[in-house]
Image (spheres, rainbow, N blue to C red):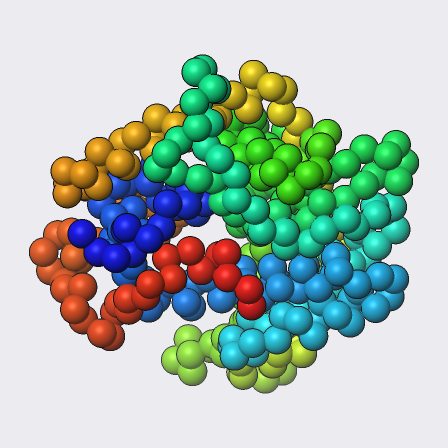
Length: 327
């Protein structure tokens, strides 16, 4: 058994998500500490936006936008930086007039995992995570969690995205985390940003170009790749024309019974993980090899076509919960 497995007794939202999907994936990530190198590129955009949102909530007034744009700088592709920047700019203008008193930002917590049926506290596992923000609604004085998400899905009112939140255990776990930090919250403000689907336009291949009699290309064809500023202009137009498509907020409440049901799910999953740890077995789940349009980065390892020792594909770290680390 690796030192990572012995050291980490924390159940975070990311860890629980992986464990629900596939216990082999969970063991490789959280028991043995492997991380696919491709994850860095895939997660980079979401990380940029998240850092920008963190800075936005920490700042006040017009300084919020400046702080957000400065915080999201990275080594990402220039077009990706433009995309993230315009998402944050639109977010600022969409929500800048909302009246919330910010009580905490990126508040890390640890809390006991309790069995709601027996009242017993787990001797193996603890809940952990970071609350994106805790705020007080100045209209009615209620205290709310704030949870940021970026999504490529339809996030409009009544969409399946919002219906799934009724069963989202992460929100329930965060209620426990807020209580551990001394906040008695009344609900969770789910703050969703929809990623613009626009991509930079590429030049039409020379052999596919068609010209009109005046020598101009037909509509939809290009002689040169789109510049970052041309791309920015298209993004601004798209976001400004349909802000409700890209920015949605909804309040998610949790009754005591709903929190208890979610904690029961976590308790049972924790028992399964403990048994897998003791037996040294972690079954694969082929149904989870393809998720969110991506093949699992460990697919080659599980299918016998790749090795965890391949330093061009995997790295190993004792930091099995990077989401809890301070930037």
